[in-house]
Length: 206
Image (cartoon, rainbow, N blue to C red; front, side, top):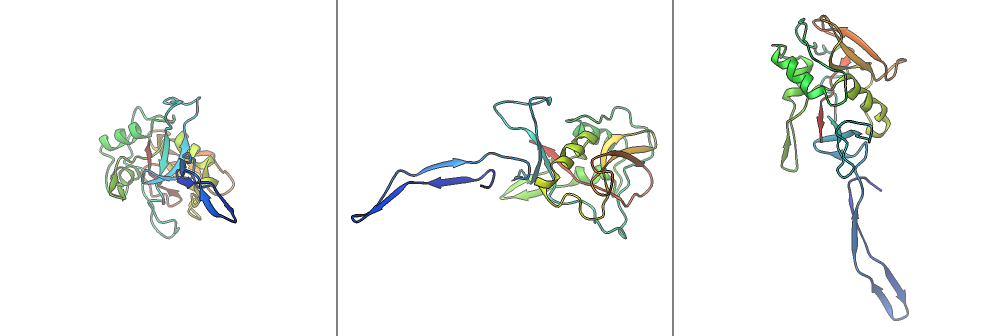
């Protein structure tokens, strides 16, 4: 069955007198990684080990349906931002939105930077606009990577790494490999130079 879908069913019996139907009932299947939901695709659902977990309400991460940059290696990618030491970014699950706000507030929101691409991203589905996207932290990216088979089309071909909102040093930021021989591993790349191997995937929380 398809997740997050309402199904309707009723029993019936047929004999020589005809067909009789029972009462119609309905049920809705649960959300899961890979479900189309909230303007994108669910990339991760919080577990009892995660901060913010609620046994009664599902929470997690929604990833944008596509890389915000072309995966064509001849296309110039995004820079992470200005070559400035940004104090306070974290790699933790749940920190991506705050990281993105720090990057934007540090005057690193020039055109075609990873944080700005995510911050400016917006999508409208069935009349509802979703505009609260951000550049994910390293751990958030890794959670999404490990659900890649359910999400589908996550690597976008030759794009080897995806940019995180986590600073590695005053000159570098952290990335996560989605393609190649280092799958799921963290790495880093220069902030100020164009890195055409680093894709950008926006995330929002639900």
